[in-house]
Length: 458
Image (cartoon, rainbow, N blue to C red):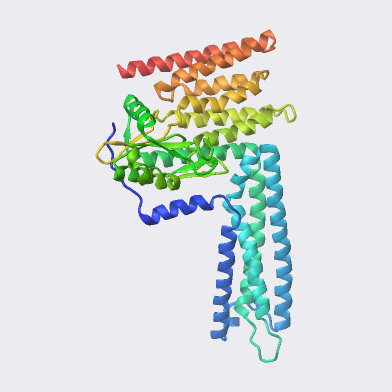
């Protein structure tokens, strides 16, 4: 068992952690906040216009209108231009979502929804429209009325900034909609999830004895009380620290039956608690700490990040598209993702309280499972594609020297599956020889890595 310092989150961080999860990918929070900001900016600009009579001397004369009619014409023209551009931004966003759903997969729409540039662009245009409308309503053409010069100048500045942002937004869309960019971004997010999970586990006490964890799980399932899921859907999030606190205070053991990314139905067993007498004290906490929803998310679900890249590869390798190069790109990035996963040790899922007592078990995601998710479907879909099969073997060869020694056996098993797939396929002799040659090199790399690890251990 590894001893480590445990630091529980404060009330504020817990609140922020849950709010950020519940809001999720959206296109309304940032535009709403920026719209509210535009109203506050208008209130400030009107206050400045009312309390300073020499505003016109603060700016170049070309930016200041001499009459209310001229100011109204200018603000009206900019309002129409910004409103038209706002409609263009909305149309471009919807078109992007449509292309992403068709070419890359519907599960990637949420990735484009959470893009900060898209959210800021929509918010900037919407806020500018609101500011222009409010400024136009503040312009009075009656004799003696003061022109809101500062507000009019802000209308010009905000409108010009919006059009500059529009150019950057179009460039951003053109860059991010490309399959290689999407795949690279997904793998980057996987790295962030791994880093966040590792940071969380570093402040918790983990149990590394698999036999002890297995015994506790077996005992909890045999004599513990089951806790049923209160709704149907995917386990999107597990608040480990909250569950650990509840189990520690009740002097019980909580064994989850589902990990993030797995599907559960209402009434199915979500967790066991042992002893059974502690059920009433932890049941509500389990229901609140294990979030169940309609979507799989990248927050704690490593397998989902891999599945997104696999989905892009499967669509590219389908007979309708037949884009081998995109498939090869996906295999390359999947290999890079598996290197990130493979450098982490296998976890038992056991988490202990501060005194070292095993209190919580979360089903761990094994390397073998992630490897199957990454390459099984691609290997099956590309059973007659020499280039993809060779690239999978290349990815395994690249993983061999850097992953942990306990992960080498699953890699060898998968290399054997690739070779078996090739032998039952309808390849000409030359193609089969190329695959066999690459397989031999892969096996050599795996054996060399295993020997190096054995020498280092001895």
